[in-house]
Length: 316
Image (cartoon, rainbow, N blue to C red):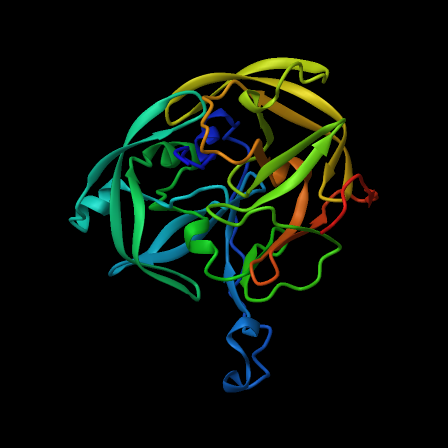
């Protein structure tokens, strides 16, 4: 697979002036009353405060090498992770040129190896990553983002994202109301999704605000009402996407009802084994969990009174 799996560049298409930031207060582990030596590593829970932007983008503090208190954007739809080029230069990391595909074009990138990266209880040594100019995020968000931490790091532990309490909880997730199995978990997590007679495999993306379908995967007419066309931007430039309405959407064997989605005329990559991106804000989740031990994605809906029913898939 050669596509750069990150939709964070779509930040440039968002309205940036109306949303404030907030941090959760640091809290102790929910297992503090249990002697640590008696806990298995999988059940030791560690809470890390996160900062929210636009009700979905996650910012947490972490470290790279001997640099601490860095701002990391946590993006489950990104792989590999991306470090700001200034950090790479300051650490004198050796760079190797390469190319990756964005939505509609191929761009040159620099590949590096980060000596070490720390995020809460997760520590990774010798992490292959991309070095890119992330100043566009500073312009969009109003503060410096030192790295985009993707699933190559986050999959080192199961975790739960709680958007209401503004924290990420590392360790075995609690049982949430709705749950579906992973289709794949490498390089990113995908789940089954469907509408009408279509069966899709979608990347679960905390760094993307929308439900996005790749036009190259939609054989024939998509058969959905088109609500309009808009121009957005990523790191490779501007492109257009069609806004459509899906009357009834399924995730795994769960029905989530009518949803707005976007169709992009992407650059087809035969190495991709997925059909689009499932942005968590688009479906109004308030809590999501990635359970890598049991290979399941779980969630709670933020919409009061929303009804989930058995859908068209067998949960196997």
